[in-house]
Length: 586
Image (cartoon, rainbow, N blue to C red):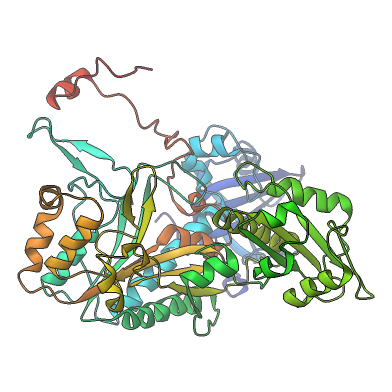
């Protein structure tokens, strides 16, 4: 028998028992006459104790020769610990060791395998199998496991069936870049790895599987950020004979279930916000509503007063930061520098302080009277002690910049607590967005999204005004899920492809199989997909999804542990009919 108990299991009830434990040596403390070893496994840490005069000398010597991360098996008796450690579950007991068996020695690890490590990101990524031994990393994966288990439990209880769809599919021109896979048996032809199982889940609805889900790997060859990986996991769902309201109610229940079962948090009914309101009041289609600070447009109050910046601007808009009037000039200058960053793009920042006596001091006093500034304060419902921050310029660019400033102020004022969760639905997205460079429309979500029924008549004359039957779930300013009611009629799907610039031949070549399926009795259907990695990082309080993926890639899309991607042999290249002559070599 390798073990009778785990290293996180023993308690005072076990005192007096003879036990066998196995695990890794976390650390060794040698005080001469006393020697302690912390033994670690996936379940916790148990302290082993040896004492001169009680423990045989040869066993003491054997213990002193143990190194960090040695894999050992120990036999001993559970005793009550004299100096208890209330920071670990096993802290009330220890093991008086009678036998140690070294199952495997270990080299000294390149970094400390403890909660607080001295290893940098690159080093820990290279030795990820060691990093995974650390408790914080292990707990992240345990959280991921619980969320996966509760996802299946919720959907299974509502008659969803889990169906696996192919990983080797056809490349399509919409969306991000595909990862492609050459076919040896079909020279010059390629599979693509799926960016989502979209068309397959629609075909499953045509097949009569009216409730489908899949926890599925998806792949996108795109530039990486903290919340992106080249391969990621989705909770992918589809339902037949449903309206948008049915989808929202089902998956509002789903997110409530996850919060209750995984976080022990009760979530009330999710508010709904139209895309137009999200952009008007927050400058983002994924607003963080943990705090207010909504945008207020000032055009009628500030134009034609002689301040050229405001007079020439398409939009003058601001926020009110509660209690921030005490900001020093240096702090305000820091905010000005923040909005002038190239990635934000504002040209400057105007501010107005509401003093304790109700008077207002602004950075544009020479252009505006006291009465003008009081009108500003009234528009913002500003109180004494508040700070008004105003940006001006082109409408879209200015809203985007003010959104960044709002989030920065929320962070500075401690309003973005990671232990507070504020989910909402954003609905009524535009169906299409215009691409100036390509001189054509792109689908805001994807080409299979249905227009709002009341907007279908706009297809020929005002396609840019059509609203999509689409919805996103947003939590704390992060889009965690999105979906739509799908087109299920061939003629409407053909119209959509025409709007997106597909020729009839191109549409048939890319999606003929789907349009053909629509002619065999396709039911009305819709669905949603959740970014599972994002949900895990949000529930765990992290900004990076890498912390919740067992073996992630770095920011260059590389797995530095196994050194992938890597070259393949000339023999393999020849079999795949790939000529590398014109490609760069490392």
